[in-house]
Structure formats: C-alpha cells, structure tokens
Amino acid sequence: MKLEEGPQQGKVGVRSRTSTFIRSLVRPGEMFRETEIYGSMVRRPPTSLPGRATTPNVNFFFHVYPVRIPRKVLSLRSTGRLGFISAVLFVILLVSGTYLMFFYRPQTPDAYFDMHTIHTSVVFGQFTRNLHRWSAQLMIVVVVAHMIRVYVSGAYKAPRQFNWVLGMGLLLLTLGLSFTGYLLPWDQLALWAVTVGTNIAGFAPVVGEKFRQALLGGTDVTNVALLRFYVLHVYVLPAMALMMLGVHLWRVRKDGFAVGDREEFAPAEASDE
Image (cartoon, rainbow, N blue to C red):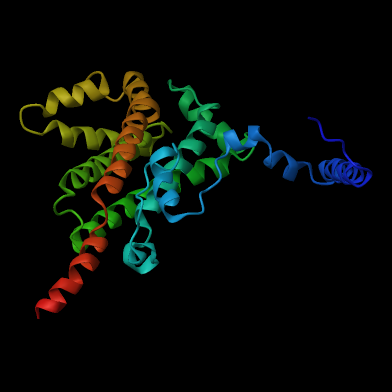
C-alpha cells in the first residue's frame, strides 16, 4: 500500500532539495566530504576509545605508531625530538638531492663545472646545495646526540637490543652518506679528503686494501671512483637507510618506550618501600 505525500511533506522535500543544491554551490568541499567516495578514501577517526585503539592496526599510515604512548614521551625535555629531527633532515636531504640530480653529471671534468653551474645559473641552485650540505652535517650531529640520549636513558636495554643495533646501523649509513657525497663536487678539497679517508681504510686488517680498491675501482681516485661514489650516495645507501629506518620505527612500536617501563614499575617500587 503506497502512502500519498501531503502538501506539507512535499514542501519540506522541495525545501530540503533546494537547501542541498544551494549548499553544494556555496560549500562544495563540505558536500564532497559527506559522500561515500570521500569516506572510502579518507577514513574518519572513530569516536570511541576501543575504536581509536584499533585505528593503528587497520590504517596503513598509522600502523607504525604504537597504540598508546606515555605522556612523558611527548614532552620535549624527555626525548628532545632527536629521532624525529633526524627523520625530517633525511627527508630534506632526499628532496634537495633529487633536485640537484637534474643538473649534475657524475663524470670528470663535467662534475666540477656542473657544481659551478648549480651555484650560478640554476634557479635556487646555490640555496638547494647549501641546504643539502648543511642538513647532511646537522644530521650527523643529531643522530649522534640521539644515540647518546638513548644510551644515557637506558633505552637500549631489553627488549630493545635489536633496535639499538638498527640505530648503530643507521649511524654508519649516515656517515657513509656523508663520506660518499664529499667526493661529488670533484674539487681539490674533495679529492684529497677522499684520498686520505680511503688510505686510512686501506690499513684495516685483512680486508682493508681489498675494500679500498673495491670502493675506488682501482688504486687512485679517478672517474671510476666518482661514479661508484655517486651510485652509493644516490641509490644504494639511501635505499638501505629507508629500509632500516622503516624497521627501526616498527620496532619502536613493538618494543614500546623505556619511559613507559619506568612509569609502569614506579608505583610498585614505591609501595615496596
């Protein structure tokens, strides 16, 4: 049995459709956010506490974060945000380095002249190169400070030993990125600095000289060495750093925070006294 709409109901339906049409013209973004297409692309955060707890487990962008974080971890005094700053500097290096790759050729003598062109003729070239260089040096300082902070706070102890090993690997990769990038300007400072560095590495027991020759592609710093340093600096080491950083962040979520462990056991120790 079909119910007929009365005059009043018909007027309400017309007003509702009219207001919806006007709102779609005035606020198209708000109307789009209410559609099923937007809801399928951007998940709305749940309002209940159990729903919020399950969000990191079902969201691709949030699954690396822990479900619960101690309040003290969020304070600047506790961590100094050194790990976060290191990750931000790494992203800056990736973006600025990608821009510089468009104007650089890893061959002699073009490498030296390309660096001169970047400084004088490329839009924001000198700014990007200086940003890349200073971010690389600052990243070493921040990563070392982060390692010191982890050691002093005892965050390397069980069950976080493996994450400490990953952190040491990331420190070595950071130093490797800085060393391989030092040769790319192909000036006298870079040439002799890499010569001294590789000669020092050659004195390592057993594998030192073989490692030096594999790194340089010979006995001297030539065009072959420049190409190998470029491949290591642009492709190999950044890919290894990205993979290791992903595992590092994942282990932070799985192992928890050392500050949380101290807060958890503090009441029990106080009660025993």
